[in-house]
Length: 430
Image (cartoon, rainbow, N blue to C red; front, top):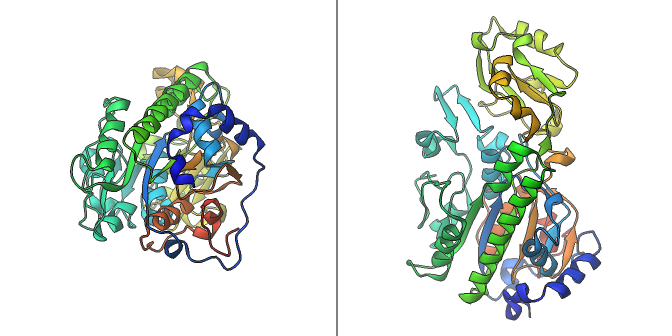
């Protein structure tokens, strides 16, 4: 029984690594006539969702990230998880916990202009981050709390706002200086019920690989060191779960996006073509969001359309369908998307920050290889030692809701796309 193995995987690295390398790609097939998951389980278990911001699946390495490799070997690893466009932090974190693409939940960028609210959203704007009007959809913790389950989402986009009038039982204002072990201990205490009713859903967030990846690029030794640092935290987490006998906790480790290498040879200077000061630019790079006066729109589109073959300029209703983006009223009337590895900037910004083009960035086309995200999972709900084909991050939400035994809100996700990774999975799983 998997639950009896619990969290002793840190003692089994040689066996588990062999298992990981022997797993063949492809989803596990469904069993005909299987009962619905929430009826087949004896009792719903708990979920701990961990985000490693900007962590590419290419960073996995037995020597650099042994704890993540061990977790994957005993549970489930996706070859990649496909993020949603734009491949930015706030949009994709909120997608993971609602199953809605940014175009449907409304966090269409890290920096947003809302014409109805006549207000701007930014990740560092505490008033905006804590304003529930910015958040569409129903995140996991809102449904869980309504069903009487305690939740503890720590440092997850949306957890500071009273969405639909509901707050998590446990939460904190984001503090990037809070040490990793303190974050883990805070969540472990809530899962164990040391601070009140035990949380059935919790989250953790670590930004190291994103911070360093932006500065140095995805292939830099500094980024590998950041991956090793967060891997050490995962080891501390798994040891903590074992020490507290939290055998019913299903750990899901994800990232929101990958990272692309930039270069001074791949740059588009916006001020060579338009005057950015003469119009409203809500977001810059690598997805340009322009809110022009009606008299400006045609001229801006014409000027930018001839700017560079690596910059693709669209009016809101002309954005290609594969982006699944453009219907929300917060999407700017003019959107310009740079190719992976290209930068949109101005001469003045580049002169102040010349090193910015030697690092990395994200936000690009969600289907580009550089933007692929991480998905690993282990716990009593998951199958043992399998590797599955890439799937969309919208499918994580119905997966979590199924494990928790909660009714899923309407979303863009589909449990059938990922049900094969579960220990008990229904007919119809791919």
